Length: 260
Image 1 (tube, rainbow, N blue to C red):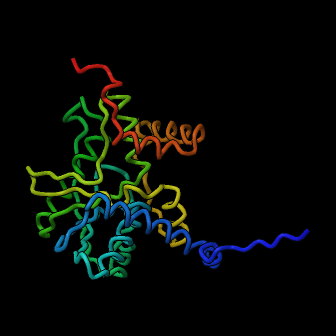
Image 2 (tube, rainbow, N blue to C red):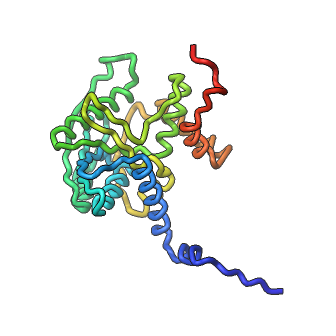
Image 3 (spheres, rainbow, N blue to C red):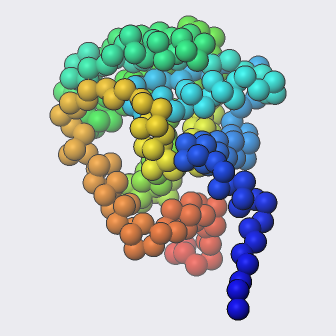
């Protein structure tokens, strides 16, 4: 007896896509879903991207620049590279500049620094991040931007959720959209539903130039350790990321202790 396998048109078409095309379709789908579902972009927005030079920020700029060419909603994109002068982070500024020029995105370099001894209660990673964020606000105001886009992906958000539960006793994370009324600025994370493993593949396929980073605090940070724990959770349950994401909007208060 001979069986004839008939593939539906969808699978026949998918088989015709190259590996890069399938990857871009998957990333674009998750990117679009995050932008639309969480209402991250409005008509007339001027969005500043913090371009560190890592794979995440390069991918974010590329995805936003491509979406900006769509008629609606109409928005503009700017990019800034914040250089922390007291951290041994060697950036190829000319590469970043040419990357932005190829996408027709205005680019700027902003230098700043921080003193880790000013607040011993905070980790150097926190102080560095906070000062970078302040620099982004400064440049955003100078350029007339109303939103700042950060390159955090789904893995980052879920790892932060685990960190906050573990170290702060709080069920919180980095939201896809955070309106900061005090500064008249909105923080958005358009890649909130994009997987890091897809971004790693994209960086290889598109030949992103890796920046030299020798941060003395990175490997000892809680985030580096939580990243390893998150990887172990996915080994235990390949669907762990979706369960964790769903838990943030499925809080069953009747099954939790009363607040005292």
